[in-house]
Image (cartoon, rainbow, N blue to C red):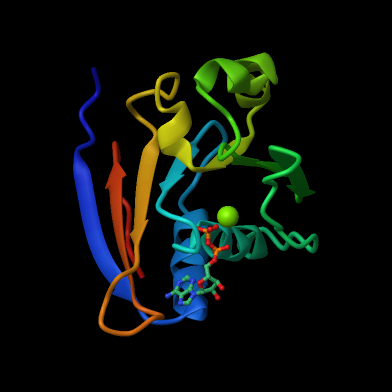
Length: 153
Ligand SMILES: Nc1ncnc2c1ncn2[C@@H]1O[C@H](COP(=O)(O)OP(=O)(O)O)[C@@H](O)[C@H]1O
Ligand SMILES: [Mg+2]
């Protein structure tokens, strides 16, 4: 089992700040990376994804794929797979949708509500946990666990 070696924690106080973090992280990703996004409704998972796709100059708006489960965005030879696991019961459903075939084709995956499908996720995925509940409604606490070193901001 691969231990999540690197941990980072930071606070953002606006959607733009969360998106800027996402852009910064996007620059450090490579094909095959899985970003497991966790946190309650409105915690900022989709907002983060929008910043992430913006880095790749993806024009398409990264809407929450709650009703489609999976969206694919293509730009500059990179494919981002955006999954919303909210309505899934377990990882088996994701596997049934061809998740591993997508990963083998070299996509970078962002999975909202990743805790629901954590039974199939590899230990070396990059976990990002979003929490609200701070003093101000726009405050978010974001913790990142990664198998490799990342730079934050
Ligand atoms: N610091 C912040 N980071 C991210 N989103 C924020 C922040 N402050 C306020 N928000 C707002 O919170 C909501 C987050 O929604 P969304 O990203 O769709 O959450 P999720 O996908 O986790 O359900 C958006 O309306 C966004 O504008
Ligand atoms: Mg969402």
